[in-house]
Length: 249
Length: 92
Ligand SMILES: Nc1nc2c(ncn2[C@@H]2O[C@H](COP(=O)(O)OP(=O)(O)OP(=O)(O)O)[C@@H](O)[C@H]2O)c(=O)[nH]1
Ligand SMILES: [Mg+2]
Image (cartoon, rainbow over all chains, first blue to last red; front, side, top):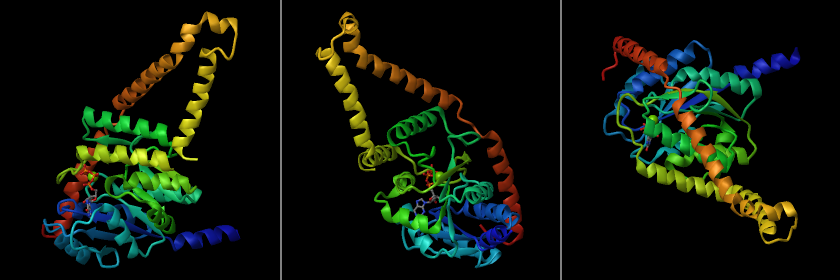
């Protein structure tokens, strides 16, 4: 009895800070915010959304301000930066202003659907996990809008990575995750890589530091609006990071 | 121990066993009779593993979930969001 009362006391004070880095997401930002509000207001969890916009030339910042007026400045928090400084540092910047004890990281380009957030939270609570990672590679997870070539590259990269690093998580390059705040801070401090491969290093460090990791299958719908920034140089970056982690962790 | 060192130690154990057979440190009529097989066994192993890897990867590519429903649902939600946000006074 006493234990359950205490448990609900703790869970009641849980707060989730959603970090939303944006660069030229004027079309997507209102919709992702609308979806977050829709999916989380019904669930009753306490949350805030922190938008980290890197001076997008398309006026994402202006849209963000309007959204803040609509949904309130306690829900929508703006932490813009002057210029494009990269994703890794955007998370660090956003986390400094987060008031929640949990951090959720997701892309603003609609490839990550907020309907999975309650599932992340439930799984985290069930096992008191340090990290919950969305996965496209397991069970009902999947991708929409990928051709044969992209699927082949991604499955091959995943196979090799699993074999070499045995990370204990099936989706290393995905960036839809929930972290305990102090855990995320420690992981960021121990990560050396920047940019696209940052996500992979985070989960490898989590394994190395013996944090518990859970997985929720997610459906990944490739961006509808805006340009994809993934190119051939990502594959080289990925290979380098893989070899680095293979030799050092 | 790093993953690299794990691989190096397991591989060296295999190489040591293989070499001791080939070089004749371990003697047995069975080994001498099948010497060519012993010599090429690492190659066979690599080929079999390659076949395994290719079939697993191709199987996973073809069974990769396409999420048609999720994409359709998202399209509907985008329309609904646009309508609702317009009503709330968003200009974009
Ligand atoms: N603040 C900030 N956000 C960024 C930066 N680069 C990308 N983003 C955002 O980070 C998220 C993920 O970036 P994406 O461009 O979608 O990268 P991706 O998912 O690997 O690749 P695609 O979806 O194929 O383009 C999106 O919400 C982007 O708007 C950056 O330098 N600064
Ligand atoms: Mg994306």
